[in-house]
Length: 474
Ligand SMILES: Cc1cc2nc3c(=O)[nH]c(=O)nc-3n(C[C@H](O)[C@H](O)[C@H](O)COP(=O)(O)OP(=O)(O)OC[C@H]3O[C@@H](n4cnc5c(N)ncnc54)[C@H](O)[C@@H]3O)c2cc1C
Image 1: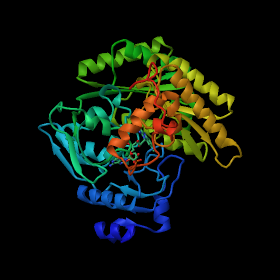
Image 2: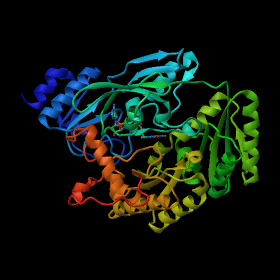
Image 3: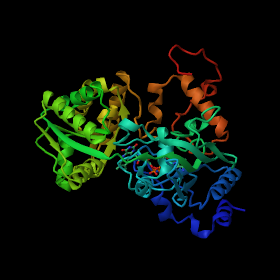
Image 4: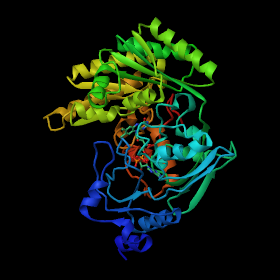
């Protein structure tokens, strides 16, 4: 039997795509890197996922899991070919309001989960700006964050259990309703593993109560540095707002041209702050944030007076990546994280690098987390520009690492940052991660050549065992 006939027999003809145009559609995610799928499949259950895994193993063809394809690091791009497994039909949703949890199929869209939980007074805290499209499986695989994960933590803080298909086709359940499962935290390893260790078919997630009161503030500043200093001081004052998001002038201008969200385009930077909780604490925190902002040079502090006003401000923020189309046909986005206290010097370095490479760079980011998202707007057809964009990107990442930051705050490594892993990890560190991958996936079935650079295994360095250097994390 051929691979195609095996897949068709297992899933039905309608759940296997093979036409060139269909394959092309699934050949990349939201990053710039395209691959080439051999076939695209849509399993309808965990059992069908397991069957496809066994078929792929028997034909020695890799599998790339895919949710909505909104990932920004080529994680779901089949750059080594193979079967693209789209999980969107795994869309079961069981809310347990008494336990404030839900078992959610990997293909459920993030926003749909919160919409379904709202009648119970509950919501799912991680809210990537792509939340109206991205799936829970993708959120788990990338350990995604969002504007409102500052106080509540990224996806890993909200996953209690996982149903996963392993490389031999076994379906296992890791974790569960108990707040702390005994034994090793294998579920914790799967969260953030970017489809390289197994296929997530369902997740048991924590749901949080919808807070009774919310205040959304918009502060505008004459300089980016004053806006960033305000962020650091708000946290240092003992508050952890629900969100602290920053946009620079180029970004607000692009958004306003498109959406008219009411952002002041004459300000060098705006800070969107949100506080939630009981009325008294919300009012007190909102006024403290206003005072800290003014002390740092804020020209104006607006408080959204209606739900429509608040929704419009958030629409402006969450549509920022889309607004890039106002400037250029292509954009390259970096996602790195730095200690909040290093934000001022990091922002200076980022602007300096872009100026030196004569690139148009915009900033919109989860400032409260220290999670920067410099976006470079460019036209890929311009001769020589791709090289400049990538060199500038590498320098930006280096600048973040130099101040104690990390390679990714929330988007993951995928292929886009794979070769930068050596900047952050020693050979021994990479070898340990490659060994772990081998335990789960000895034949390299799942998402090959992602996350770990070639030569990560020590044996790839001529089989020479090395002493563990000081500072290695193993
Ligand atoms: C406009 C825009 C805004 C964004 N904003 C944010 C943001 O605020 N915060 C943030 O963190 N990210 C953000 N992202 C990035 C992206 O939306 C997230 O990483 C999201 O979680 C990806 O979900 P997805 O369903 O699209 O996954 P995909 O892109 O399809 O896949 C992402 C990775 O997960 C793996 N994967 C998918 N499903 C499974 C599964 N069932 N089992 C195992 N592995 C799987 C894939 O192989 C791939 O490695 C944004 C993206 C865009 C385009």
